[in-house]
Image (cartoon, rainbow, N blue to C red; front, side, top):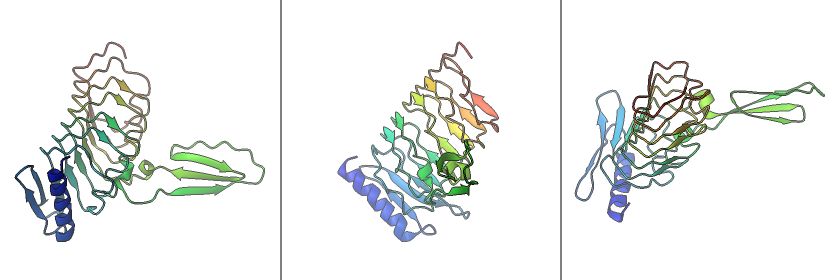
Length: 246
């Protein structure tokens, strides 16, 4: 992002922080376009940053804006989502990132949508007991006779995100740790990418997902475990792929 656009974004964030959620009303013109607004009386705060030339978002950029419920970043020049990009946005319900050039989503991007620390459970076992512990909640560590289960963020559904829009980007692979922390997600739009591989367990934390759009990608087969965890799924869209086996 050039200096002018960087300055506009910083100014916008400062204005929103100073004015607060009940007074925020911002707009930017000239060399770029940006807009933030408070919609209606239901305290739904939206920041619109679409049709800019944003190529990078520095760590902590939105940390002071925990009141935001909708962030619109479509039609920019983002190429990757990093693990600390959205730190502190625990009230975010909708995130629009379509029509960028995103080809990478790092592990932990969406677990950072909450500033709440990851909890853990410690269980003390009887002395000398030989036990193997397996847990779907997260990493399990056995030290002597004490079992500590470090619960992952998605296990307690700390993220409030319900809609994630990522269509019209350049994703090619969906990995098993890409969407960790999305236990409340209802709708995921991934159409018009170049997705040719979905690892087993990619959607395993999305218990509430009801719509998954994978139209217009490069999938050639549907493998076992690809859609594990989608017990609430109502609509699965796979049109215009290259699927020949399932």
